[in-house]
Image (cartoon, rainbow, N blue to C red; front, side, top):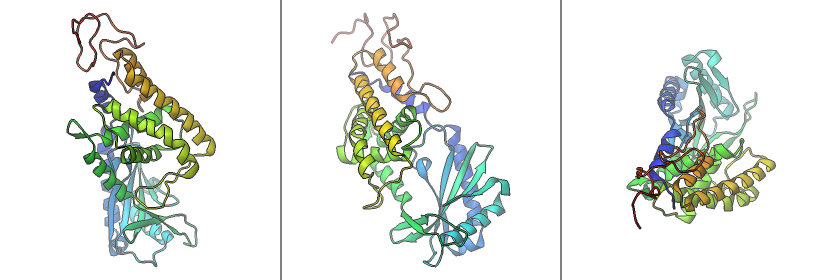
Length: 333
């Protein structure tokens, strides 16, 4: 089995957000400060918190948007979504130029052109142990609220990463990143990254995979996705944060059909790569599986002792990171 551990570590570094992480942190801080500076929002107990893939540390290069969950701790049932959005828009208009602000269906978007990213500030009011965010808005403020719990997903992600470890480090988060990268490499658009993150969560929850490498875990999760994607395309994907609720997806029937076909191919390729006895051929397969990052760089590196076409270079040295010895190395089983 060619698990190529050191090269998987390099692959993970190739999809890390990089400088985007610093930019996202700064943009989040600026938007949160503008919300806290609003007297009306302060009166409603505004308490902004970062949510989304960046907050859960599962985002991949590059980060294009950041979500700020504007919790209104003291808001009552009289607060309408349209009014909440008005207050958010007014607060952000005092902190940023008008051209940078855009009102959306359930959030206020603030553009940071210098970072080539944006922040979506979403108002939320408490409902028991959960939260509600705007479902839709109209000029008469007759919009409704929809239940959600994004902070719970962050908690579940952290818990899962502590429960499953590899060499003393959490393995769940790295595998989510790898699955998100596979989705990006194999699908044109929908279902999105969050959908596959939730599938990965259920894979760890239901299968409880075990392994000695990133490769082992990735194959186990892709096997699960291959099996379950046709099912959830028909029945819906359960939301782990809200009992009885389903994860929303913008995917059309054709997009789900295409995703099922593509992920079946991806899972088969991953199994082939894992069971391949030749490191170079395995590396070529992992490269095909993980594709390129947003900077058009190949995610999985070519081992120093291999050629890009998956054949082996002429060498007698055993290279760090390999799990099989090059021919003629003198290493015996």
